[in-house]
Amino acid sequence: MNIEPSLLVLWDDLHEVHVLWQVGVLAVSLGVAWWASRLLPQLGGPILKWQAGAGGFKRVRFPLIALVLVLIGRGILRNYHGVGLLTVAVPLLVALVIIRAVVYMLRLTFKAGGVLSASERLIAWLVWIGVALHLTGLAPELLDFLEGVTFPLGRQHVSLLTIVQGVLSVCAALLVSLWLSRVLEERVMKTAGMEMNLRVMLTKVLRPLLVLIGLLIALPAVGIDLTALSVFGGALGVGIGFGLQKIASNYISGFLILLDRSMSIGDLVTIDNHTGQVVRLTARYIVVRKLDGTEVLVPNEFVITSTVINHSYTDKNVRIPLPVQVSYGSDLDLALRLMLEAARTQPRVLAEPKPEALVTGFADSGINLELGIWVQDPEAGKSSLISDICRNIWKKFQANGIEIPFPQREVRLLNSGPAAPTN
Image 1 (spheres, rainbow, N blue to C red):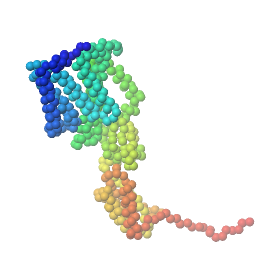
Image 2: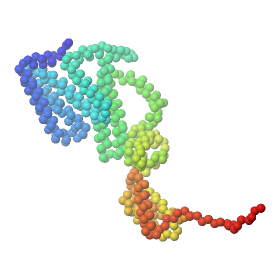
Image 3: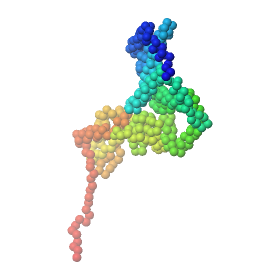
Image 4: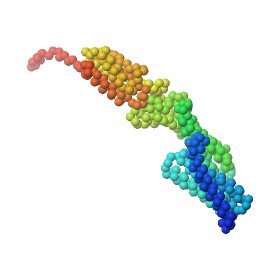
């Protein structure tokens, strides 16, 4: 077995007295790193404004500071005697930095669950196995073996090492792209001076754009020719044109909705007899929360091609009509005044535009009236508001002798005399 010279030097240093200097440097480096990592939270706030950046630095600052101090100490002691212990400590600290940084990026990018835990363990094992191969000298032999295993791919021969490097590069590029897109999305969504539609559109564009850039950087870095993907791109285009045209149409429609600003989060809309508030805009569908709490997923293509009533397009104020009928013997002016008083007692009813009480017609059983009120929070529903106003109107009508009629019919009997006898 070919053992790395650093381990041989470490074995020799363990039999010498000067190894105590290395132990001292390592202990001081770890102690100073621990103390500095406890002190830096007070200094990191004004320097690291992004919470994601501050959170990532918090997890790697201890091994990172220790690594810098060990490198400085190794550079100084190298002029006097061996530094085998510090040389072995360097890759261990580097591995700890990588594991903590990658695990943090995973937790920030993906939701907690079994897949996330398994990914964290897999990454930790891969990093520590790589360190062990490096320290024991098996890494060059393993790389030579992977390089020697080749198989044809078209006109080229691809080695197993190239495939492993490509997979690792693509995974790293995807992880960094997804993490960076998550950080930028949170930053964009918190920008108060930008319209909500523009914020949502930018967040939808950022993730695929960053993933594409990451792949374009990662694949050529390991020697993969991107022109070989032209055939795949053509096949994908044909698939989108035929089998995936509905999905593609929904994605394009989603961007059109955001660009023309016909709908925004928080709007009260009516789509296909479903009335509710828009709570989410995705690339494929919009989520409408109805007034009863249920949620409807409406494809973006349906929103583009059908009639949509947006109650909040230019103004969130909505008029709610409330029909009332009184008997012909009632005081009409008093009834109208009592209806307005009942409406003004409700805090949700706007004072401007002010409520209106109107006479709308004469019916068979009484006079038709209408109370028109305006609210600025239609997403809160109107059933409870109408119920409260109707109860107030009923109480006021009862107290002032205003009668609400019920249907009446007058029946006249013609030729009501005794019937002629029949033989």
